[in-house]
Length: 338
Image 1: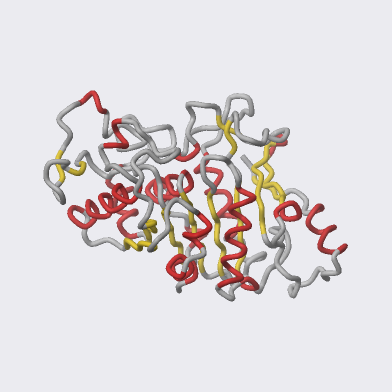
Image 2 (image 1 turned 180 degrees about the vertical axis):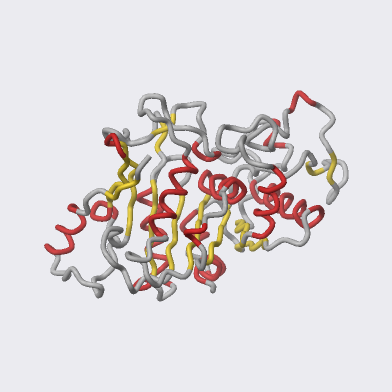
């Protein structure tokens, strides 16, 4: 599937109409309605993006790209605004490209545009599942992310790009954690520092069958009940989807251990009955709340997968809020650290 970037017509017109010259000194686009564009594919298929600068003209001032992944509601526009504001708060707006792709599900508040990839119920973009049969050819959400990162690797457009940060909150955190495991090495990204920020997800893809032992805090055990299917994909590697199936589990684990991953958790995200918190047996085997599940997963990395390049960072007094997480002092630090 050949990638092409569709026109920047809407954003260009609005920037020119607002008096901003089309030069490298132009202010970043920050209003979602003006910043919406498409990553286009052959056959008229497209992935909707919100972007702070054009992807089809040279951007020599950009040194960092933040790709932020939205939550369950498909509200990429809101996540784009949150991250654009975070860049401004950090004093990094002029050198940071903010991108918010939209992975839309049937039944979301917005309907898919003609040709836009979307996911039917039962297909999980958070885990790299294939898009709907209604927009053939079907494509994994993770392959779409691979194509987006390849676009950022184009040195003719981004000659000075030094870092790419993939940040996701809630459902987006699920996406980033699983993508960081399944993403193959890409020579096109050599020389670019990749970081992954996994914020308050409902569940994790574990690297083996062990789960927290509810009877022994801090210990892990293999669940005794096979009915729970605690290690079934997307919670473990059993019966993986078509994106993960061809890959070696050992290779994926080795790559994941070496990648810069931050688990960014709200210290007040502790409600075991919170909205959109997965209540499946497999998810509950990871812990009772989002905070507990994140701490337990990090504990499993420390217990069984040392050495690794992962960190746990908690944000005091914050619950399940992407804005308060990413715009907190600690959130800004991990988003913009070298």
